[in-house]
Length: 178
Image 1 (tube, one colour):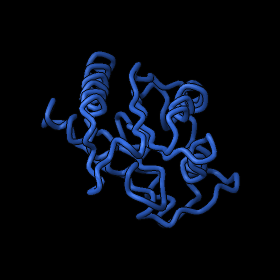
Image 2 (image 1 turned 90 degrees about the vertical axis):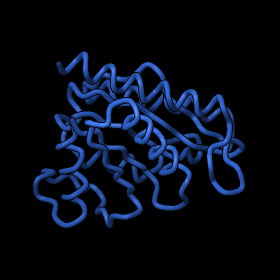
Image 3 (image 1 turned 120 degrees about the vertical axis):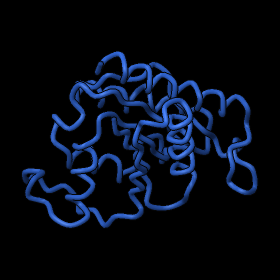
């Protein structure tokens, strides 16, 4: 079983930190699960131009293939201007609809205002519906205040939500795919 955690940011590190933390919690629950962090800032991904996803090459192909080959996904995004990152939207445009079909997915987001958690409900969950994915009921929104000066998550409530999301992802994946 392979869980791919996507950090949909090309600047900063907070989204990748949160995604990585969830992946670590998943490994604590079940060490047999293979995890991979797909940090979009490490890839030079082309803009989607409408061609067949199999026609892309280089880093774009690597990213598409990583999502397709996953058994389940954790998707993270920073929130910019009350929306997901353009990098993540581009990834959604690049992958075929079947890439996330009938896969369990969970969401995390980071941002600078407390109201931006609504982006998960109002933008990301409907996209999951388009892809025909199974969405974990919980999600994690991490505000800038939840990090300390060393960019570590220090808020106990956020850490508890991360643990719960990891447990939901593992539970749903095992129940739906057994």
